[in-house]
Image (cartoon, rainbow, N blue to C red; front, side):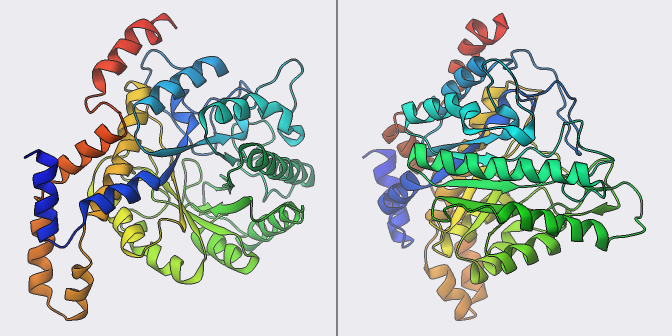
Amino acid sequence: MSRFTEAKEIYSRLGVDAEAALEKLRDATVSVHCWQGDDVIGFDSDQALSGGIQTTGNYPGKARTPDELMADIDKAFSLMPGKKKLNLHASYAIFDGERADRDAIEPKHFKKWVDFANERGLGIDFNPTFFSHPMVKDNLTLSSPDEEVRAFWVRHGVACLKISEYFANETGKPCVMNIWIPDGYKDIPADRLGPRARFKKSLDEILATPYDKSKVYVTLESKVFGIGLESYTVGSAEFCLSYSTKNGITPLMDNGHYHPTEMVSDKISSLLLFNDKIALHVTRPVRWDSDHVVLFDDETKEIAKEIVRNDALDRVFIATDYFDASINRISAWVTGVRNVQKSLLFALLQPASLKELQDASDFTALMVQQEALKTAPFGDVWEEFLAREQVVSDYLPEIKAYEATVLSAR
């Protein structure tokens, strides 16, 4: 008897169909962020990182060109099971000849990414880049009191909306376009309403651009604070949720963008009650929005459980968002994405009877069964998934070989 066959029998006794869990996991899509490969540098500017974003470490082998980044993405994707999308920032425009500023980027500047995605059967998600640019004035973009600055970033948002629809049309897969701004103040502001009113006006102007809502899902991401923006963030959770609800767009939660005692897993069910779809950026905060590599930890598992137990795999856009330059960047990619997928599988292997025990107020049995599931043979089911996806279990030797032959030459 194989280990998987034995694991299936054990889960069956717990009321779980392991085969059905594997089928659902196979169809679950994770949108993988491109910026892990080059420390969020991009290709459109030599500007230093700004907006509360920091990448620490100097591990050798960082991607420096589009070709290098695409090669690294290929390597990382070859070691990730399941369905994937590519998640791009606008700063990864590829220029052949004259550069365009961010308010003038066009679909043609992303044609190489579309070709890359189509050759691999991938969809593309997109993010306007409201940071690391000279037009970020006094830490403000879409909320700036300087009309020239605000108008520049509105044009950027409109350009990105058109590019997002181009991605959807060219790949045949919907594009999630996520808006996040780093705007805020280091110390206590004299006016909290004004910046938010200007942010609202800017979003209204961007969304006045016609687009196909069946192809492009605009999401809005909040944040509690950032480096240099400790006292006030324009795009707070209350603002972003209120705006999304009122304007019929999709709220996005990044689990690094809240107070350390707030759990995104606890918020998912509330948002599902009031939104057709929601979006997530899955990361690992260490005391703040530090974007550490995602682990197979309690909160990642709880996030996955909330998606699965509420039958919302087709209602939640799942994307990764982290960057670590202190370790091999490809290993960071693969480890984090696999841990998101592991968490989804762990959730899919939970029995429906847990809800029934809660509704019956049998909290004793609920605790006992939840604890028993922690030592169920989850690993054997995960290994079966990797085998069916024809992906190696121990990926470190392949990454080390790639580092020796490719990364070390950079």
